[in-house]
View (cartoon, rainbow, N blue to C red):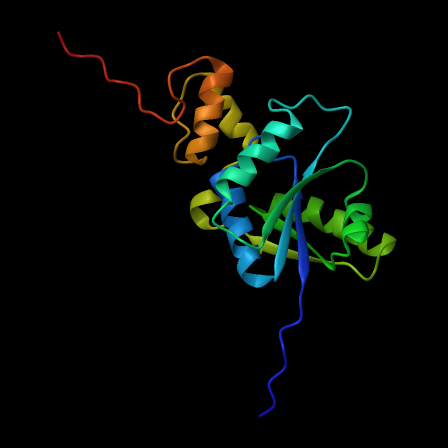
Length: 179
């Protein structure tokens, strides 16, 4: 049986990551096992007002993915398909939480395929425990001082606590004592 050398495959996993969640991290880890190299592309949109600046999101993602040697992190603006072409990526990785994600993601995948047929989109379903987690949910809970440690990496919990000026977003609040 003839052995062929592995073919390098670069994939891009893009999003706003405001902030990166455990669901995002799970998809990044899984993509890094499937592809030779993964770029986490942080989309910067001039019309949006994110909680964390692009540089802070980049720092947080680098911190939580430092154990993955084949993962890099970059910010980009403009079309994802153009970013992929510039980096010579052949695959876009997208996560799916529910059927509602699928319709939107499929529409985007079709548009991307129309613009650049040489780049494929791969859908990875989220793990069950992360199926309901979104960055907006994490922001909302943290903004009220809630514990988001089940939904976000420690570095993100700390950054959220600093941002909202609350007790640790990842630490449970002490229960009031009975009198």
